[in-house]
Length: 141
Image (cartoon, rainbow, N blue to C red; front, side):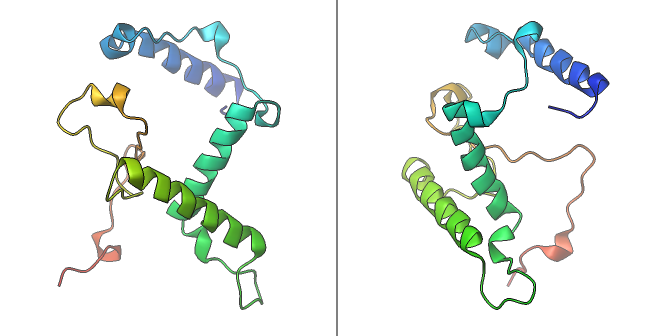
């Protein structure tokens, strides 16, 4: 949850406003502001599993799998373990979406309703106002 009371209220208001989305209404998804609460994932197996999966994806997206402790020549055990978890998750996703690219949102294969039917969906969240530095991307040959 956001860090200030005002931001928490704004976040809850935003989630509640999603009730106006016709696709969510059609699929009987409803957000009730009084039901939106912060939890400690350590006490909820499903939330903890989600934390682990999202953490592994974030770990890879931010190139943390390449980091070595200062003064060391090899990566730490946790870094190696997180990379192994990411590779396992990636393998499983590729069974569903061959050619999956972690840096791109998964498509709908021409049918928007697939957003509700695919067993795995992946969105690349891009902050508003962000810009791509094309000089840092792959070079065309």
